[in-house]
Image (cartoon, rainbow, N blue to C red):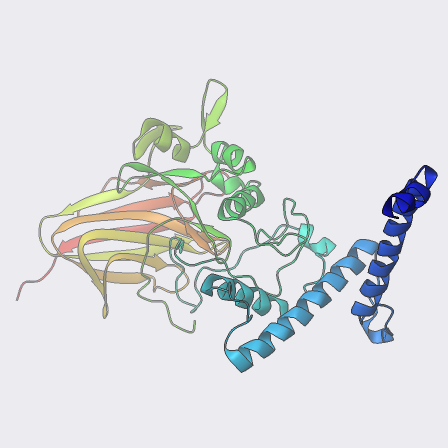
Length: 398
């Protein structure tokens, strides 16, 4: 009986026909089950919830809508059972990832970057409390935080360095640093050699006469602002409140020569240009700083560093800065016996800078206990952006 069935039914062309028929029927059953199992297929979508735009934008909007629906389910499960999933294999790491993803989804989706983002971004100040910005607030221990106002898209020079990718992913730390340096590469303050480095996404260098080492600039990963490591204290801050030498065809500023020659003083265009001036105080002294001139193009300051605490009014610190916009024209500083170093600083793009570009100080011959100091910031040619008179006398011993 079975042999006759096989000979009659599953012989010749009937074998191919039977095979194709089985697969066609199975496919039809799968399509019907899929249609019946998807309740949202073909459902009415109110006009206010319809997605417009290009095909990619519509797909992204639908993907986000599905993700938000899933996030709502997970939120319900967390309220009822304390976990986002009832799967046996669900672990604490899975829970952490799910909560982070849901927290990002509940924020409004940022709009695509506008044309205005292609304009150079002027970065704000380091300080969040309104006091004197620090020489760098880089902290690798603080993670990158995604904000709802961050734009998305393809980054180009001049755009916000914190720009997210089209899928909403934040830039890596290395990418963020490279973007910041490329955005600032057009600023002549940094000098030609540093500008070449910055155009390639590499950080600028400067020679620190206090340590005798070449320093590399850093980027604050939270705010994408450039700066330098270290801190200066402004005792008057309120809480509310190109001369160049050419060699081998490359023109070098004094700041670039400090790096090249590993020194803090160079002969430049007939003048001895200092990165900083160090004074050895044999006894406790009173240092009087009298400001004669300060450029109004940008904040100018005189920085002080000592191996013993300095005291101005009721502020005591080993590092201070006297800004032209906050300190009075004449300031008396109580300094203990030891080393005292002075150099000029200036503020640009919300960060405090020194020892780059056209920066440098000229020191007049002392007259008695008084010396005049003329300083240039890093912009343009070497000019007198800050001029002060320094008087040092022994402190009165009771």
